Amino acid sequence: MSFSFDNLNLENVTIQSGGALSPGRHVCVIKKAEAQKSRAGGGMIAFQFEEVNGNGQIRNWINVYVPSSEKATRIGREELKTMLTYAGHANPNHPFANDAPVSSLAGLTVGVRVVSDTYMKDGEERTGSAVKGYFDPAEVGSTASSPTASATPNEATSSTSTDMDDDIPF
Image 1 (cartoon, rainbow, N blue to C red):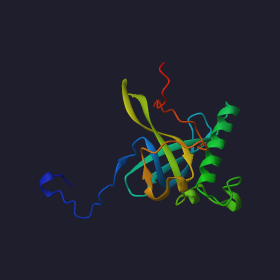
Image 2 (image 1 turned 30 degrees about the vertical axis):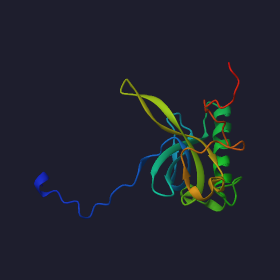
Image 3 (image 1 turned 60 degrees about the horizontal axis):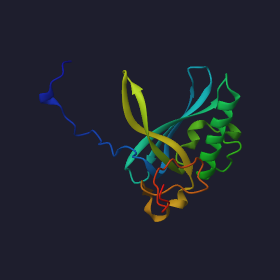
Image 4 (image 1 turned 30 degrees about the horizontal axis):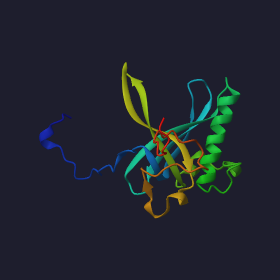
């Protein structure tokens, strides 16, 4: 079978909504949660979040077991429990009790704080977005997605804002 652009038919192809989420605070639905092995032989959960209004998506990987680091394991589990708590999971202490699969996390709604992130790819520095923390989606109110909203004091991670709004002259 040969390919020809002359015969390309996109009638049954669905369009993709949004792109990568921009920095800010977004209310998202977990579209996919999947258990994966890390390169170091540990365990992690790969999440795909989609903004509730379809304005974009972002992925995040949470390490739940890092064989060479108790600290990294603890941090990853704290991140997972924070996300589950803000998402209103029925049992954030034992999310996979009664043999619930990791995929059972799909459908939960959680606030996701996204920041700008630089990384290296093919020897070139690039800029993208990364998940920096989670928050209660009720904090956003009726705006559902608010990329310009400021961080709240009870947010899982601290704000890295450099905005200065005080009158100190130095």
